[in-house]
Image (tube, rainbow, N blue to C red):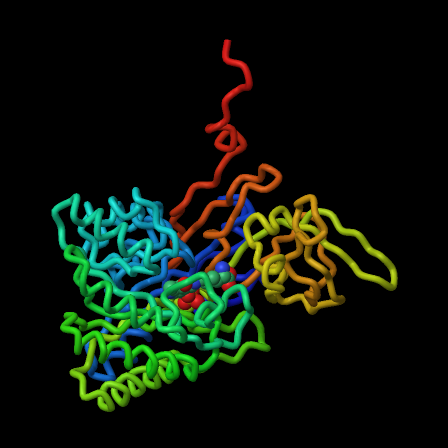
Length: 432
Ligand code: LLP
């Protein structure tokens, strides 16, 4: 994948850097990002859209992996940034992302988050529900501003993916329900909000989607609503179909190429808009995982092992669910190899465990590996999305460092936390 290769000494190299050397220099666990691969993935999205000739915007879904450096890179590559919290919004602003090119999402944005968004003059806010509609209208009024918004529609589409990451179905906490007419009602109500300008509609059907069929159905439904909005005089011009483009975690995964999915989406928009005789909108997408997922590799140091004859062989590493909770949460599958012995043939199947105090703290249940020895460096692939961003302090483990590698150069973009950092916000029981 990307710039990965095996060096002459049998080590795994990424971005022209020896990962064993990276582990020694920066410690483990370590998130390593192949910067070239991220840029390539972004350029593939641009290229696919350019081929369609339609006006488009690609907003990087920062929830997948949000740091200053990543937001800078996204902006450099011509992406907008989709933020879902005050923290992500501030990160994008500090990274120098153009204000107009930041969007804010969320099913329960706080007053403070809405105020920050309005004060900062971001491009648009995606309104999720009726409570927010009123709240935002009031925030905008108080700031003397007119705020551009999209309405998020739950189009009632089942994306065939894990239920926790499927969001377009009717039974979802996100968006205005299409099936029972709430979305239609929202279109009417936003027209009456004096401080909001509704410039588009949004839907997002789920994540880790392998083919664009679900998008097509969602586009048909949302376009009906779009036509109604136009008839009501709303200045609609954006159709945002969300993110969710799947990646290849293991050989079992077989997502359609991005290019084909984008073409399917744009074709669906063209035909739906033709049916309703509407001028073509700007099409927006919000990919997260497909931009950064495959570019990330986590390096761990192998520690203890436990052999249970006839049952299972466990090998433990110095991270786990605190840097990658995805197996625990979704039963996600990963592939791995020993970075310092990348050419050694597997001799057995190992269960790769983390160091946290619970049995569900596993990274891989069945990894074919050469017999791992303490001190080996284990590389787990495809950890670029929803790993660092979902990291936790469980068991008071510090959050690992993040490095970007490119052309033989490694840049630390997030420093490793220390035990001292973990105590920074703590205060003693009695002050005296
Ligand atoms: N836009 C919206 C409105 C979303 O809710 C999401 C993801 C995205 C865009 C980006 O989706 P992506 O292109 O990354 O699939 N933690 C889970 C994934 C949760 C996704 C939530 N929303 C995981 O680790 O699989």
